[in-house]
Image: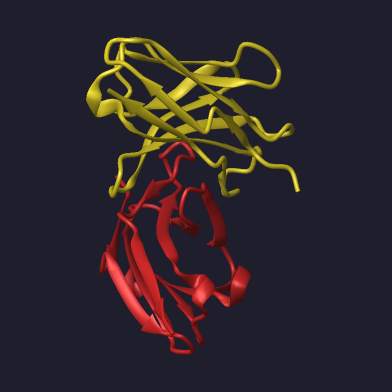
Length: 114
Length: 114
């Protein structure tokens, strides 16, 4: 079975500071990994995904994530936080015999201070 | 850009009543999903649907739940006799045929059971 753990349910950074949201996964097969963002009262929007190939993937809004198989991690980063980045971020995994469904982590709420 | 649409955005119902949540997936997508998110908790998989039948369901998706694709565009989730603990945000999602393609989510229906 696959699972996702997001370290830190709340992360607070200052505007302009580095954003680092942590995600570790468990999978017995090569995983497909995703980061989604959820703004208040909205659905989940895809930020980026890793399937195969380059392990550093770039997404929308200046975010990127690196797949590290040896560490079973897929941490999300952004060099400089913006106030508009304040939202809930979800890491998710799929693949193998999971039938294509996504398994989500518990989410990390990002706050950005002026 | 095509998107998944869900109606209504908010549904209030009394315990024991039946509710139907509606979704229009993206037109060329073939795999459909329902997820739910209880306030403050993670996004949980309910059911996946392909080729007019359920391909997988979670433990949450008991006999009170059913899904249907009554025509070529709508995808519905029915809860036969709602319970207080069914109060949650329900998200519909769809994807194209590729196994590693991301899920596209609707904005959700907030279900409140009183």
